[in-house]
Length: 159
View 1 (cartoon, rainbow, N blue to C red):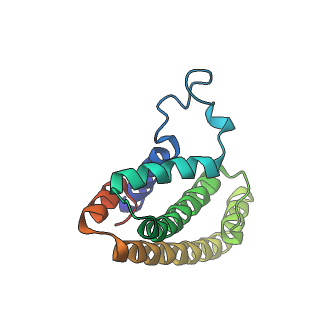
View 2: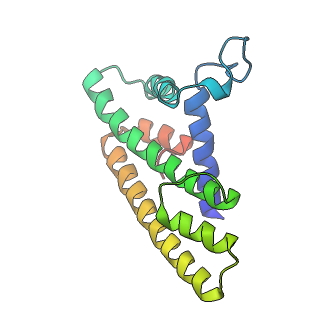
């Protein structure tokens, strides 16, 4: 349950970063483009600008360090969410061979042994991603002030 809560918070944070400063992004013709036409890099930039304002960072050198580490956390979280969605939907591409193997085993209604093996490989890959994410979060926390860390915690950027 805790993992799902973390993923939901992350999805909320991602939405906050993506939609950030444009209050009517979802309404084409009313202040912004339709969601499908937004560039992911552009969405990250808008979210990063909003994060800088929330963190109240004035120094560019300090911000460059923070944004680099925040982006790493963001990218790792997005990657984990995409993997989960790919398994649940059993469609769409995912760069993880473990995810593809699990999807295939489920779709083929494989034997218990094959399913267990695919699940174990998937769990190991997910654990490796989680470990990478935790390290990225620790790296980010090392450079944040206590106030910034509190904000990042509330946004789901760090644990």
